Image (cartoon, rainbow, N blue to C red):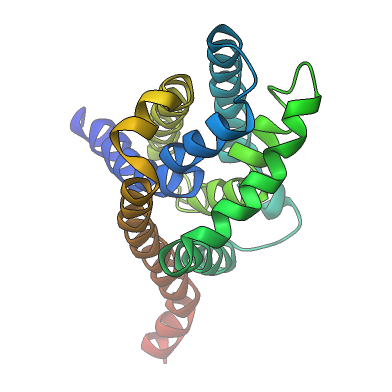
Length: 227
């Protein structure tokens, strides 16, 4: 019995981390973070990086913990939520996989006001630059993969929370070490990592979508068997 929560938490972490890491894209974001804040001192950039990491964790936890229940409140079934969420995740992954430069240009435009704002840690550097609507929608889609009910819910959210914490920690480290990352990887290396992560995100989206389709077809299958 004790192995069930651990297995559920581990499965949730393995599902959540690659998806959240791919859509947040800390490595690609760090390159833009460094460019936009080039006129700030190293200490200021380090402080902003830490705050963005903390705020990103809060946004992810709220999206994972509340988003799915809010949609369920409006009468959206778990199967429908999974199908829609899988489509959202897969479409985001496809954009990242085929045209990462488009995503980079959009993020650079979102972060540009940071150079004119004294305290820009939450807006625009956390939202919408790091954890914008796309990240929130992916987090809600991941939350839809939770067990329908029962003991596994706690283990599921523990695994997802750990994934969110690790992604946020990566954001903090990547943004705080942006200058070193640029020297080490360059834009080409960051795009290669982005494409690899995007492929994993596409696989996660297809998995969520397929689970949703099975959920929707299960009542029909039961009805056929009953006849």
